[in-house]
Image (cartoon, rainbow, N blue to C red):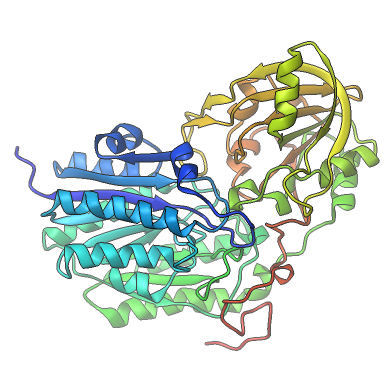
Length: 496
């Protein structure tokens, strides 16, 4: 059977922490994942990612995927103006070369900020819409941590956000968006969208969708999806490390030709969140309290989530605050992964079996603790490459954290030193170097919710800890300049 529809497939995904001083360059996307044309198909076909979901549906429906550009970089600072313009230009160049197209599928993040465009996702979509014209349907996927602008919703035909944190449903959301697009092309659906943005921040520590108030929010999506005429519904919990006007939670629905219905559904979900806003505000133990709890726990391993050094939200990954506290309290058998290319290189120069005296971590800036002095033995050196075949947050498969050294200290701790920042989404990060985390007493993990999919199977307990840093739980510690006001809980606000 000949392929009926020709669909452009592309993406630009970056979670931009605007409180980091170093912009994210084009080379950061090249180092992580930047593919064009056939390379996009080779990289993403079959992946546990929305791009993989797009391709699944197009293949099953015998529609032709016209691969454009897909760029991803690990969460980091504001995207440089040069990097944004280069990536956007390359994507638009591929788009124009592929035209005419029947539709477009775009994987965006929703919390991408460039030096020139605070709403970088909306700006990219504006350019795509201008290129294809008003009649060509565009379906967009967004991260659960998006800060969603009215402009983005107005430019897209249908928008679908992840519904799980950790993000384990990315492929399914890509499939949902692609199916909506093809139904639109066949005349089976006439999607219209409506957005609600109450003045609400949701603490990062309250964004675990499998439990608590966050689960109740997402149960609301299930409820709304039962309404006749609703095609899709989404919640984005927001990303308050990106200082933009749209910062905060957002709620939207896609309805069958009925904007009033879409608006009622979006408002229904938003009101539910507003009513439980107190339950969506964080309160976490201090580093001292967290380490003491882990040290006195009946069994381990106890995973301490280092919230202020959350690599998945742009932090440096070299905070020593929790590790230093563990040393101070003489906790035993701890495991920590630190980004420290200089220390990894020192270990490599001496080789496995060598005794080393190192100062590790705390080297990126002065907000995440000072370097820690340690003595130990280099047990393992690896190239830092590993593969995760299970569904994990972020949809990554092949990973590369660069030259990696594992040091066992004189007092029984295990320190993994990496040469590239790597979000802790996979136990393969440790297993590839022969480190069995399940045998440790205390594990310090540089994340909040995202690492749960990897660590829950081995952890006796997971405890979030209120550490300082560029991804701290408390939004009050960040000098926001662009955000709207009032915004609960930063200010008292009324809504509804």
